[in-house]
Length: 91
Image (cartoon, rainbow, N blue to C red):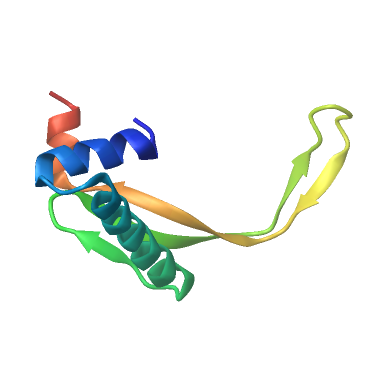
């Protein structure tokens, strides 16, 4: 499912226009992005938790040349599924 299909589904289920559904989805994405950018986390009980994880610097290899390279430390977005979501996916 892509963003357009998700907007269509929200619009249909909530009985709102596609524009309103798009605005609601954009607001949700903006809130999650903003919270993660500040180092916070977003927990949706039963669905899951969005958080930020730190990756340490490490050595890697260029797959084309085999030459060793240094990979910088960075922060990455992480999602951990909640119990209810995990149960529904594993049916």
